[in-house]
Length: 370
Image (cartoon, rainbow, N blue to C red):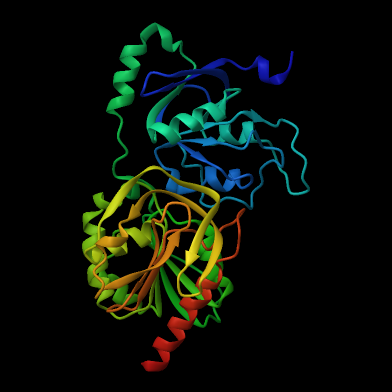
């Protein structure tokens, strides 16, 4: 009997009543979350440790996951933040010179409940057609109390996402012979954002999401980085109000993903929930200024409504080539630009890393003026 058949029977129950029967892997138990899918072929460890997935059950559309194992270097944060994990098949004999273990053991250590041996293509089609929906992974027999479980699933809501993933105190990274002093807001930041800044000569002070404009001013930064993060951007009312104050300081600002959404909201724009979001390493984005299309890594369920940006305040700088949604904003009255995608993508295309250089150029110009 194979290792896969030895595992317990597990079920995925969706809010629309659909049941998928598979096998349990990773941690055992029951979990409810928002079921989403990512189309990335690699970078599964980065996805599992990306705080942007807080409250979500992640489906990998690529059929074999775990073939190159896991290691201590590919963490994007100190732990896994996904609520649950769904794969077609996991590899129990990983082969890679960097591998230090297999994905099943990793999920157990991280207490992530998983299910494998289900039809992930069918599941992805359901999400694409109906939109993201809540679901439950469990080793209990769902047929025995399906109505009761469906009630629990439908009542589930992701709340206080940023509060649950942000750090509690400041921490500093980088060389003591730094050129630029950058503050990185932790809305659920990925480690590679910090790394990209450090490699460009920055001292990076990571600060909690609730850090005020006055506290930022006291740190005397040359630049401010707004990170990615999870959840509905509109629920972060205090942060949005605070960013409005921070934007008045005149300090160069670069925002990514949730940081992009929060900055837009702070400047009077609005955001919308997408039907099934953009998650994966193959999203085409047009840089309007360059007239070029770049392949990007993305992980978001909400988007800034491009038409809601006041033309006097800013303009849409990037658009998604698939659905035309706003992927970036260049501001006119404040010293800021933001993008919806991940230019720091680890385990994804590096095509848009030039945006970090643009941020450094902004800082240089700002320092020269002062």
